[in-house]
Image (cartoon, rainbow, N blue to C red; front, side, top):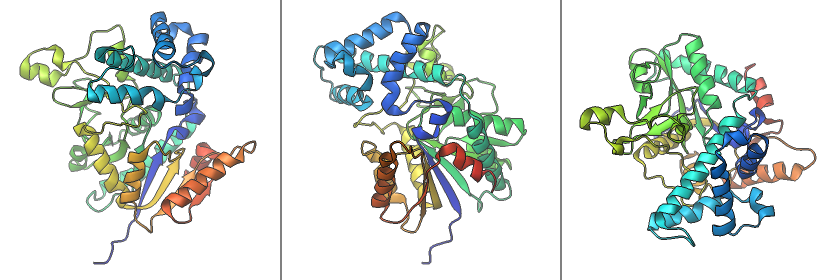
Length: 371
C-alpha cells in the first residue's frame, strides 16, 4: 500500500521554549528555589525551606556548596524507587519519603509560580496566534484536515494560557485539547470541553499534549478525571490556605469523602517515570499518533536528554524515516560547543540530516509568524 501524503507539522517544545520568558531550565530549578527564597522569603513558609535543607544535608548527604547544582533526577529517583517498592530510604520511613517528595514538588511549583508571574511572553503569544490560526482550518472538515499539534515536556502554563486566551479573544468555537479526559475545574465554565465534542459542533481543537502534566491540572484519585483551569496554577491549590478541592463528580455519586481530594499529578524528573496513570497513557498514545502523522517535526528548546528515555523511545518508534526534522535552540557564541553537540546528538539519533536554527525560540517564531 502506498503511503498517504502527510502535511502535518508537530512542534515538540521543551524547557528551552520558555527560557526567554524567564522560566528556569530543569537543571537550574534547585538553584532557583534558593534564589527565590533569598530574595523573596515570603514565597515559601520558612519551615519548608528548612525541611528541604535538612533533607539535602541529613538524607542525601549533599555538601552545602553543591546543593544548588544537584540534578532533580538525583532527588526524585531514589525516592520514587523506594515508594514503588515500599521500602525505607536511609533515615526516612515510607510515609516520610512520600512527604519529602511532596515537599520538593511544592517548592518547585511555588518557584515557577513566582518566576512566571511577570514574564515577558510576547513571542509565546505570537506562537499561540499562529497555531490557533492554522488549527481553525479544521472547521472546514476535521475528518480530513489536521495540520498541526504541539507536544510538550513542560509543566508551565505560559503557552496553555496564550492558546486559550487567543481563542477566547476571537470568540471562536475552539478549545485547547489536551487529548485526554478532562473536566472544568469551575463547574459552569463552558470554555473547557473535550476536543471531540467541539469538533462535533463545527468548531476546532488546538491539540496540546503535555507528556509530564501541567500546573493547571488536578486529578481525582478515585475516578481519575483531570480537572483543568486556565490562567491559574491550580496544581498548587492543595498547598494553599484554602479548602482542599474535591471531585464534584465523585462527591455527587458517593457523597463527600476525603478519598475525593484532588491531587497534582505532574511527572517529576526521575529515571523511574510512572506512566501507568490512565490519563497519561492516553496522552502518550496520542502523542505517538501525532508523531507518526507528521511531515515535519520541529523541536524547540528540547535537548533530547538521555534521561528522557521514554520520549526517546517514542520518537525512535513512531517517527517515519522521511519525516523532516528541524531543531530550534540558542547558540551561545561564548560556548558554541553545547549547541554543536546538541545538533550532533539529533543527527545521530535520527540518522539523517536536520535543519538547525541557532537564534532561539523567539527569533524562530518571529520568522514563523511571517509565513
